Structure formats: structure tokens, C-alpha cells
Image 1 (cartoon, one colour):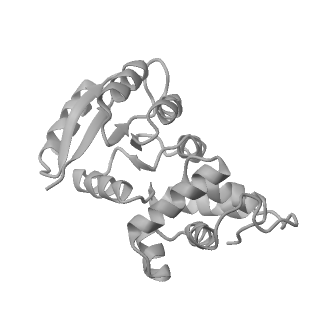
Image 2 (cartoon, rainbow, N blue to C red; image 1 turned 45 degrees about the vertical axis):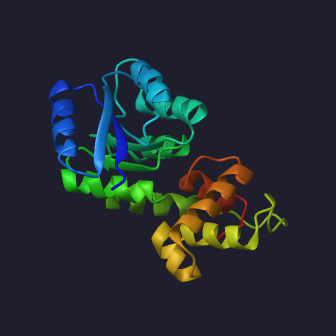
Length: 217
């Protein structure tokens, strides 16, 4: 069985120890390192290249949003899942716009974290339901009128379809079922969408497309 390598960033020693213990109990996960501040996290992750970083937002030194920004610049292949006690939608949007693939609050169970890691590694985005609702409202508020260019980024027909389904809230797996393609193909299309649009995440791509009037909710 292929294990997912995970790096933990948390400044509370007791919680960090608890996370190491909880996640280490899952056979498919391997904790390969930990850090208690943002600067250390960036250097260690760039060196170790784990598959996923479980990252607290509130850290001494640089915060989780800046850590995400730096990691996506220096190790873009590493997935980032935010785990924090805050559910401020502005912080969520900033983290995901910087390239994070999901957001969970610290009160969730280890099983929830495990399933969120699985979803992110499969190419999905994870949001708490209350945050997802706020994002939906935000999406509606930024929706613009068509600007006369149907496809300013040169997306293929399949890439446009994937983007439109993602904008409607479908997961990668659900998009694959609707389009009758494999989930990894959906992820490939999304990576092309991100590159062509100059963005790092589902949320940033959807907001940019909504503002341009290219997709509708």
C-alpha cells in the first residue's frame, strides 16, 4: 500500500503531539516531520518534499497564509491542508487563493482529517460546510457580466466543462462521473486550467472565471 507522507505544522506542543499520535495510527499515512513556526516549516518542507502539509494558520513568525504562498512558489507539488481554530472566511479565502487545497477547524475528529487528506490527495478541495456556504455566497457576489470574450485563457472544451462543474460545487469525483472520465483526468484538466489562468486553486480559478463572466452559478 502506498502511504501518503504528511508534514505537520502546529505551534501548540500538546496538540502537535496528539496529531502525530492520531495520524500515525492510520496505516496509509506517514508523518515525516513537524515544525512549530512558519519559517522552519518552509525550509523543512522544501527539503523533505512531503506529499501533504497539515498547516495551522496562526503561527509565530510568518503565518499559515504566508507559509502557503512561499511553499507554492518553492514546492508547488506539495498539497496543503489548513487546520486551524479560526473559521474566518476571509482567512480561508486568502489561504486557498494562495494555493491551499482545503480547510478544517481543529475540533474535527482524526477520521475527518484522514478523509480530508484522502480527498485532497485525490485532487479535491475540502471546506467545512459553514465555510462552503459562505464561499457560495461570495461566488454569487463576484459574478460578473460576460465581457465579450468567451474563453480569454484559451481553455479547451473539456477544461471549460471541468471549470464550470467545479464552480457549481462538484467534487473532482462528481465531475468525473458527470463527464464520464476518471478522477485523475479531472485533476489533469484542472492543473491545465490553473496554469493557463495563472492561479493556484479551485477557488481562485472560479472567482476569476465568475468575474470575467465565463462561468455562471
